[in-house]
Length: 231
Image (cartoon, rainbow, N blue to C red; front, side, top):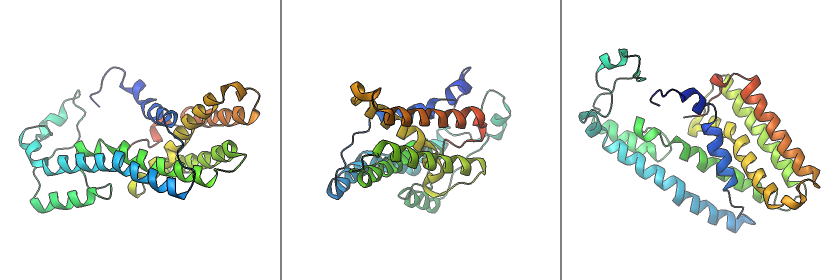
């Protein structure tokens, strides 16, 4: 965010890497509808509530941060090439702050500092999607293949929305795009768990290969600058 020498390099992989690691750390706990509800409650506590708490804090203290010069308040600063800010901030009314605070409950209406937690929104929704897929496909012998195809399609839809500059509520367009990386991490973990059977099971090899090829298509053939991986 500060324009470091290797910013472009870091930006080329940091978001995909985060969600691949998230997939690797995903624990497959959903076995029935009851466990799905239990996992959903845990995700609300571990992802939604932290997001909401910090967003409300940054929203309600917005004017204080303005007065403390933690936001850019002088348009002249925007003319300096080494400072990447393009927006000048100013104090807002109590009514506006209350409106932003209320919209925070629905993943919108935050401040610049609060919006930096966008990845919690995306991770929360993406995790629920993976939970639902595990629930629906729990007894399917071709779990990995179908799982791969579903998330490849979701990722393709997200990519298309990005290229068309279409944004959806709750950052759904971003969620769809990162599903390819989240699911890749999930399948890598599944393959690692069954490492002894990995090379004997062509299904596992196919799913990983398909995800790798799709990832190459998205970030090599497509123009990375046009792919929306942030809120």
